[in-house]
Length: 338
Image (cartoon, rainbow, N blue to C red; front, side):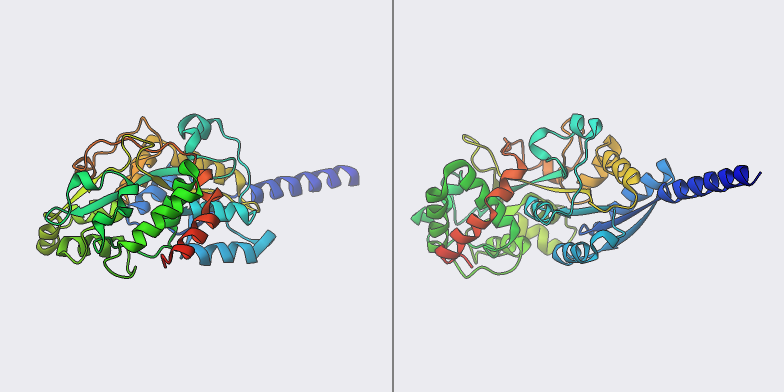
């Protein structure tokens, strides 16, 4: 009898432990701060019964937190923007490899790695003042180094991940010498020292402080969708060019995420990442920040983005953007692009 009771107790303990392991909870660390993400998370909970506990913060702060928590971290998933930041999490050995037929079949190969996945994309376009610059003079990123634009180019900091990823793509395609030539040319064409974000650059171009800049498309779309009369007037003064359409195509960056190495709820984490690749989630994930779905067959109706026209996107693997980040920073530093 004692043996039987012992077996029963062991069985109950095993069931109890299994129950704990399969607790219907997902702990999400996110550097995304968009209102439409609320619906994204609520729908996942409704579909699966898995409750999402979310901690939001800045990318570097969250990465440092995950690293410091180590094996005791409660985090299951890390979500953020920019391939460089996702690659940093990989370099810190924070992600766990995930083999998923769903993710492999839906996310294009160039938009995923073995341990993190892109769920939306954005493009880095050229924005110019229609009275100061001619469209034919800014058809390629290389044109931003043309002396013809001296005193007309403005930008955010060269150390910002968006610019580093763009320069990394230039290095990947054309080599370090061409990349440094571009960086030095852009510095020579500065209208002012780099400052502010992409929205500030667009507004500076619209007011005539600068003639041309580079910006992620979602900043352009936000201003195009603005209901503020002053911003609507500003947007009438600028135009957008999809760069390098006769070459590699416009530089593409991403929002994405992965399952963390010490995730206590790995099954829920895998389900969540696969859910983000579903048609419904892709629409929420992309439209929340005026981006495009990573899953090519999913269509999003966004009049602001559609007004920018069709374009050829660079198919450079996102992992290559991280590969050349350090070199991109060194090139910007040597060129004086602070």
